[in-house]
Image (cartoon, rainbow over all chains, first blue to last red; front, top):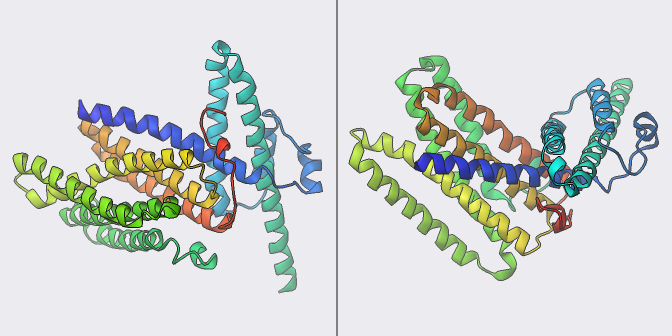
Length: 133
Length: 211
């Protein structure tokens, strides 16, 4: 009985912490402007839509991986899927949630675009260092 | 390394001490695993004893986060006192439970203490999170450190609860804890490396229900 109660409380807390953590990750990147190259490649200028997320993630996978970014993009990817699930289920019953989930999915896509920008800059730096040596 | 490069070692000393302890215990665990094997008594003793020590480290690291959040209220003395009292209370509770049912008293006590501290840690992190929202804390690095700690404690508390509910799943528990353990150092490395100390955040962005 006690273990079941702890399990329920832990899962509820986990969900809340996870959502807030992802929102804090997204908020940290929401004010960063995108470079002209990333804007051209992704089609994202100032705001993104949820539909652009998959394409940006595909582009991310083409760039060399950076361990410090991996955790963040995986967490936001999971958050994006959770939003997709909410959109397909709960948002049908509560229409106001539809606009909220769509805005959040757009923010996820923007976060991925900022990460892409960083990876491109990182690759360019590595290339420049190799050229120098 | 990230904290050192960002000159945050002293400011978050206990957090860094915990990560150093985690690295040392992982090296020790690997060495015991390589010498004695996964199902050996030596590895299991080392695993659970080091886990208990690390949990106490993490518990004190959490108390320093309380000090950071309540720094303007000058409540450091009360936080320290509360931390020690709660730890003693958890130890006494664990001892009273273990005493009734176990022959291997010390080992059982160590394992139970870890589990109880994970749940106490989860509750304390949740209270701290509520305080962050209430006080409209805006320091992004601190917020991310607290949230990642909350995720870690929730994962471990849920894992131990599942283990108690379904004992046959115990064999998956230890490897799963190892996977969870990688989350905290990575999340903290991100927070120290990516976010400057003066980075700020609108508190309304954090609430799960949009304000």
